[in-house]
Length: 186
Length: 149
Image (tube, each protein chain N blue to C red):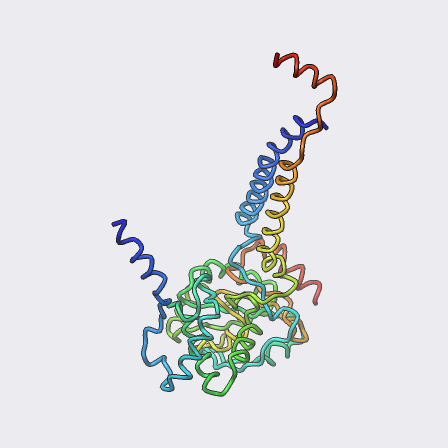
């Protein structure tokens, strides 16, 4: 290779680098648009571990529940943290209702909310839950590693957390991720 | 304005990070314990506004974290124990200063890598420049002499 071609190649190198970076960014943006990538999502420390033990009071008329109640059914279940003041919680309500129709047990935990506000939320958006408990102080949520609502945890029959979804559930996520995992654990 | 600039910059440097402890009731009565709690909170990330520390943030979750940190400090936990308690729930991301491990090795080594690359580039450039040209052959010397005459 003579000196001239080498120089030309070197001049093209930054262009190639910029093209590669552009391609990478484009890929990220596409995945963000599809909802398969969220740069703010954090990995959960709970995945692969037993769910934290807790016992919470109920949202009337539902009675409260503890971590052992979730595994008592002997099959995988979902734990869903929600709040009446949370917009994505309203958006994911139809998806949760569909899961309920498919006989997936969902345990609801109302995060930092009042009894009347939670009651109003459930009346307006439907109640897909086996039971609804109240985490008024947000302490149980911190034990789960919750950093915003809604968050959904998939717990297998032995009480081991297999998946955490931060943010609202959509039909796509349920179809592509949640249901296949539930099927493989059943 | 230009004369004021150094003074303004000095002010910026001297300014300490603001603490968002808006409610004095949040603070511990024991100043030494409060100081320790603030030092811990300064090292932890608020997960809602991800570039603020737990001490700086006004987010609800950061308030909860501040309360828990103070409870654990009063209970007698060391700074490391409080941070470990947080990391067990939220992962290394909660630490504003990431620990050195397999995942963060490239991050921590980045300054050294950049320095080595720059040193290599300088060395190559320096060698190329320092190279003495080949001595002229007899024919070339003759040609040069002819030109100069």
